Image (cartoon, rainbow, N blue to C red; front, side, top):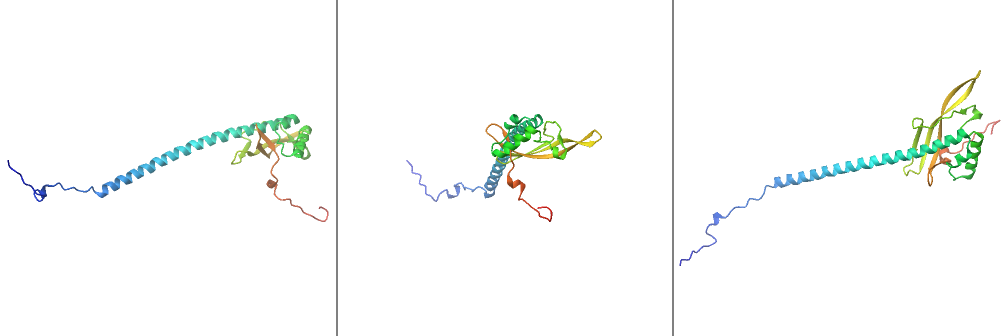
Length: 198
């Protein structure tokens, strides 16, 4: 029996030398992973933004169509002088204003301007002649419409003119309602006094 005696000092040079990984290689790998993560996050954000934007456009278009339907009812009530039809699209916010609008509809002066010699030409508002501005919370809309009027130029001839009519609509329980404008929209009252006019 032979005994093989070994010490730690024997074969010291035979130990494998562990070479640490190059620090630059790990660093580049981490940078690439971070860049890839940022790119992925940007793509997901862009897709989310596109989806939300498309949904908002769809909702806004639907709301504008609903407002335009109420505008058409208002015009129909004005041309037919139908106070009952008008009542279905009137906001009940101000009773005096509602009563005035009903009287104007019955007398045919809701949209016509006989005092200026202008008679409303029966027409249906379209998206080409109507501009709708919605509030950010989608509860009110300012509508600007081009309204066609005819007027007498003499010798039995008439001509037409288009004037801009600005109206306000508020979201009611089941439809958009024609409403009085906010007093702030008119600004402060201005008066002027002269020798003969006060």
